[in-house]
Image (cartoon, rainbow, N blue to C red; front, top):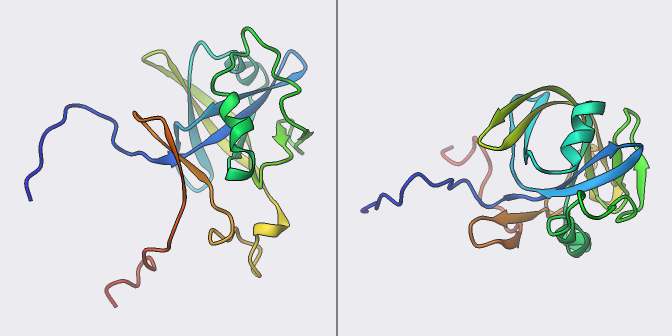
Length: 181
């Protein structure tokens, strides 16, 4: 196999797409994102362009939600990536509920993660919000008998950059830690 150097490109896509929710000036605001990372079992990182309207609310309240998108509400979620909160009030874009810890949760999202910001790092016009997971909310319809998310039922949408295409998670490829047994 021969590999070609294609430059310094981010090649970790596709990645789950989600809608970030936060309170801004007393109202919920939303933005579509796909830049996130697991930092530990208790923390994750959300990366948002600094010009996003929602960043103001995240900085002020230190609370945000990550609402994982599936196909059932992808069209509404996609609109949050093409509509600027700086120009349009997005507070009524979704039916929502306030989480136990003060972040707005999208009712249609089968998985929502409520977080508190532990810190922020600025890098190349992006805010990297380091977030402690406070609560994860999952719809009963996607839970298995042990109360865990069943990804054979729940199929998050994935975003691929630079083509800007969406994909849906698919078939099982193997069992972790058991493939060489």
